Amino acid sequence: MKSFDSIDPNPSTSGRLVKTAVSPRPIAWISTVSEDGVDNLAPFSSYNYVSPSPPVLVFNAGIRDDGRLKDTPQNAIDTGEFVVNVVTEELVERMDQTSDDLPADESEFDHANVERIPSTDVAPPRVVDAVVSMECTLYDSMRVYDRIAVFGEVVRFHVTEEVLTDGKIDVRKVDIVGRLGGPYYTTTAPTDFDLV
Image 1 (cartoon, one colour):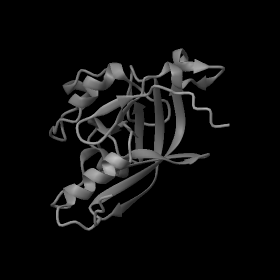
Image 2 (cartoon, rainbow, N blue to C red; image 1 turned 90 degrees about the vertical axis):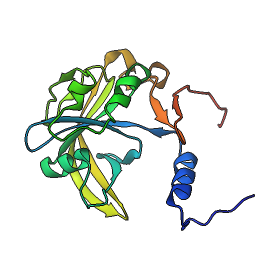
Image 3 (cartoon, rainbow, N blue to C red; image 1 turned 135 degrees about the vertical axis):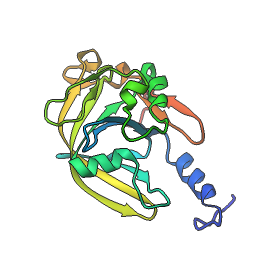
């Protein structure tokens, strides 16, 4: 077995190792609104939940060399609000387009032709075609080396009825997209392991 020092002179080595080993990673397609009122939409595959009840989510993003944050974490911290939209296979191409680097005064919703709908409790809009959206208020944020981790408490869930069975999200009805190592993605395909 080969062993790797995590403090490698080439940070891309340890980065690739951890991103591939920790996979599949769900993708948070996060909508925010800037303090100037511009709708922002961007995908983050460094994302998960940290508390189920009350529900708290976390995503993180790199900090630029000049110390500035990307628009999404900056907007979430400035306004205290964001929405996590779940990415399914039919949305993956538009999701990818929203990762383009646009000026802060341009909306990725418009750039990628993604239809928006108003949220109920927060200002950022939701993605119309997302089967699940979670409206969040800022719980906290913290710097971790060259990244910023943003925590959001879910204040409202929106779930399309087509993916529900007995009032619960049925993973057999949702083809959620996840990120693997490198340029690879996957979708959910539940397998029944006999682990009783």
